Length: 264
Ligand code: BTN
Image (cartoon, rainbow, N blue to C red; front, side):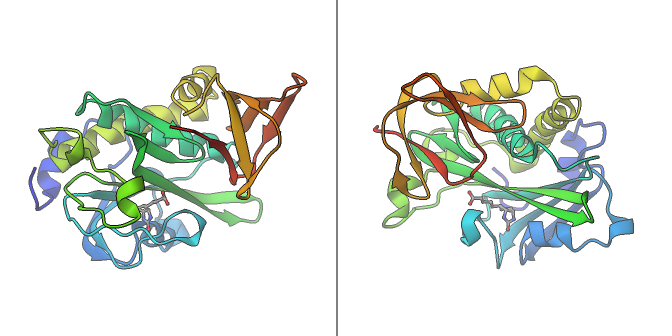
């Protein structure tokens, strides 16, 4: 894997129709999501991609930071200007699903998704997605989907070693970052198009790769265990989290803090 990301090689590899045609790259920046949000309204182009080797203020879910030391990791944001801001949880998962599929080409290990937006391998997190939305009144100005992936050796310490993993831990041959990013953008472009035209196969395909799908599981909400068991039905066309309770009533959750509790 090349340590220095070559923009020229990336552009040679890129096969998308529109995603990534506008490509901005930083050796170091505060956060690619922040950079995407700071583009003035009139200058923002639907399908812009921003990539950085280092982020000084990388952000994760729940106001946590996203630390990435090895420059071989991938951190990038894709910016969309969709006609409406409904079904955004589905768009987040659609992007995560596309990324997972591309990463899967490089390992025999199974990759899967964990609600709401983690990419998992060997029961540990290999990547995460942070979606942010800017509005003008009720309409979305832009949706920013930020993706962080652990690719190179990360030598996770302490608690992180129990919960995080890198692609280098599960493959002998790491892909070139330029090629991998170009392939992921092809997948994300397709996923966005399916999301945009409300293709029903999208939420069905995503559901099948969610951890706990089709199983009777326990749930937690805001860190508190809920009583009883629930059959996890995956997500619906809006990206809402669906379960069947013990009375066989379907319950929907939009709350990001709902969790399938898995006992590995
Ligand atoms: C998570 O907590 O799992 C989401 C992590 C998202 C990290 C990515 S790295 C690129 C983009 N820029 C950021 O500041 N965050 C996202």
